[in-house]
Length: 499
Length: 93
Image (cartoon, rainbow over all chains, first blue to last red; front, side, top):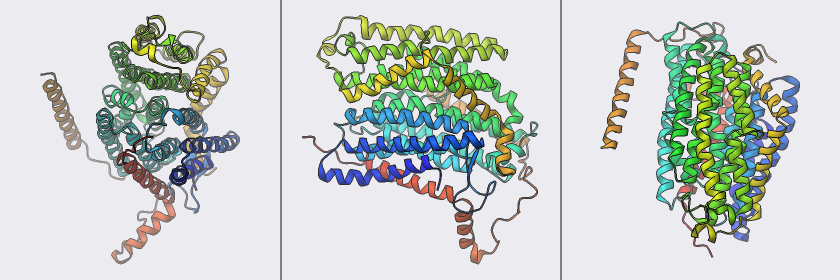
């Protein structure tokens, strides 16, 4: 129906309740997690096949079972960028699902939990596969809906319900804004197909309504991308959600908002590029400063990491604002690195919280003495995200700054550099608290994290080192994805003139 | 005191946004279907009220089948969300 990887994710999502019902009778609670992980592995296998097809053809167009083609008919349009992002979703989804098997074992409603996790990965995949604004919106809703429930999953805690409700309200406002922008675009062009929109709005720079629509698109997707001042849902949602969900939200879902935004801006609003470039760059600077300054004030481990995510979204959006091949490649590479680093940090934070029952950094002092493996991995993640060479974060952040300097956005690049220096303060405070300080009573009582939770943590820590030591294949992949994003002519030709 | 200031700031921003939006609407006429492809058929369904239901249904199933089936999965996910948030907590042994 859709594409094999997306089909696999949706089929496994629908199958999870059936598996849950069977094992509820038999009493094997871990089977659901193993089943969901298997679903992600099957999707990864199919994605490999699809990636080979994309590398041969450039763009794969899926129009459904009936021969009613776009621009009137709905379609999925898969290029290197779509494959690049989906690989990341499945990879981080797999790590968080494996981690969840032990982490969530004391929670009820695991059938629903794994159903929603698979639904969220399927939603994000559909979003980057969509070749039509309406198709994108339907999958966007799938992604949002599942994430609301996952944030509020531990419903016995008031904090989860409050965060989930706040997230629901803000995200729904964002979706409504996107819907209004879609209606304006349809009103002007009579289509919602991206390729058709790109060709019809290519020479409309003097159209006032185009700028109104542009503002609505930036606000709508900016809410999901946690761009300051639309970020207020994120610290609450990330800190209240179960840690694997925080890892998914921070690692892949928030950057998806920025990726979709830049894809739409490049395709549909190419005639207004100078306007949106400067707007995004200014928003990026506010986002960096907002995230980093707030992170300095936090004593809650997950809230600190959440504000750090906002700061990194600022870096990513700045790379996108440059809109050159180097800038886009740098941002896409940073999305990969940020996904690996931030998932690692949230999973480590989850292990600390599970063993100590607290997120308060003052009580987590010296936990490195009792949880050495987790703390070592956490330290690697912290050094990587602080952009210290030779770990992975250094390369992508330097690439963004270099791209900014080359595009003559020197002041913005200098501000990003200043932010990176600012962030080192709270990252090194984290390392000092976890490793160097004397253990508190709470820390002393902690025991080592279970092996099934340690495996994804250690693999992610290894990835931080490996990508840092050998970044070339990842930079190449990011460059190819960036080229695909900028090759608008090929994207239009694939739909309007047929492959 | 701080909450009141935030509310005031938000309210001012919303009023300003509505005013700017209203001024823009007054200033610029909406370019309704100005950029439509001339080859696109003007009517996608027959303008006959007796068969409009079947026509819309036919159009959706023929042209927008991907969206329709994706929407079914959204409904499935919505049901799963309800089940997750309305579940009864079981006492662990």
